[in-house]
Image (cartoon, rainbow, N blue to C red; front, side, top):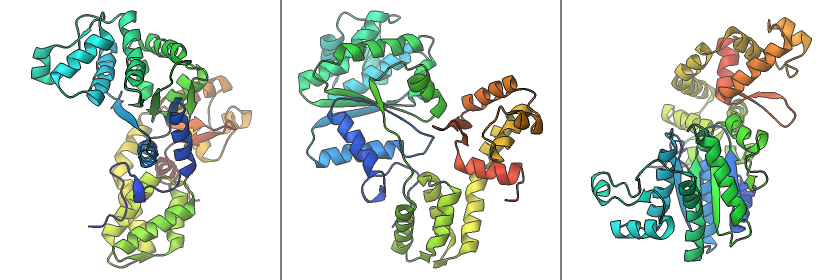
Length: 383
């Protein structure tokens, strides 16, 4: 069965479109041993970009190991350390004997150990005998550098939802330890690189841009919008693969509405495909849009129900195109009380990852479909 559009998993190869510049940039940075950060909204294409870049490097004959884990469910320091160590161990070993040997070689003298009984019961390949200390953290963070040097090959560790590193009480201590080890290793073989990704844009900006935990030791790879022509050509080819056709202008309209967000566009195209038998016309696209919105409406309603009246008023101002949010006219028209209150409300909306600010310090609603829904259905705007 041909898939008109894929939206339920990351894509590579013929299903990956655009972003050649970002792929080349990421591959070049990794090839130089640089650490990389990628922070974009959920479903913006971070994993697809990484996997396509690694695929390209493999095709070019580059030899490396890559592993990944998510900080989504990390709430304590031991949880993070065990996951970090387990990922590295499973990248390079498969048996109990290998895990035990690696821990002895690279983490000897620490509170990390291989517990054969726990491994048999839970497949946990690294355990902690007691609460980890600063020495344990430093030793573990040096582990991938030593491993890469001993194997004589590049190792990449992808850490997803990296902003959650601040959830444990020792989060700032952990970031400082990462920074210190990065500094120590900067003049070394440079065979190990972090790929740090996050979908909470403002939280990642806080780490890398506001508080600058890593200074210039981590390079950001920013995802740029995919060209509309590439998206429309990809969509039309997808429809043709299932014997269906549509008007290019209708796909361009979808690109505009979803602001070229490929995940939303692919979901929308897949629904269009399921609703049609042949030529896809405007009524089908409108029905598909309603279907996509219905999937996300409960989430959007929950977001709005969680906002205070001031936060709703500021969001209304943003949807009205206001950019000078602390200006006296905006404060008066939208009942925001004072510029000091606007500052607090802005920070609250940013913390909830509803809005962010671009390079021109202009407010933007992060989720394009939420922006469309809140404008049309919540504020009932007619434009």
